[in-house]
Amino acid sequence: MPLATDGVAGERADAPLYRPGMERGPARRGRHGLVSGGDGKMASRDTRARLAAAGDFSLCPLPQGPLAEGECEAALAAVRPGAPGLRAVVRDGPQGHPEGSAAGEA
Image (cartoon, rainbow, N blue to C red):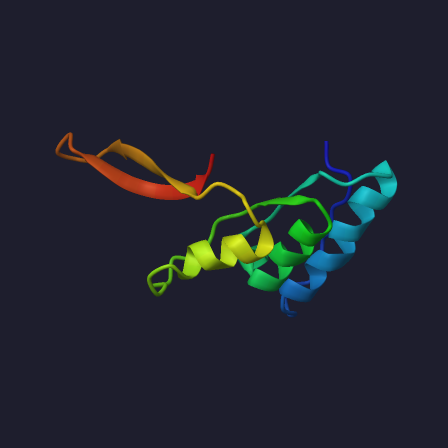
């Protein structure tokens, strides 16, 4: 059950609109450790870092842009020191051969 939802007009950037909802959820429950879900625009480094710093979590698709070798791991380590690395999500491809489709924390 959502603790906070927002419906907004579409003519503004989404990134600044996530913070009020992210703050209302823990305030209503009186604790952290909650999960905030959103679209790809919620995946900004700043938004995810704010959640992690408060002890909360995010569920959103990460951008598909190319990253330099080790950039993703370095970003995760900066936000969650000591956290396990990413694990590949593997599925059967069209020819029956395994192929990676995503990566996430275990």
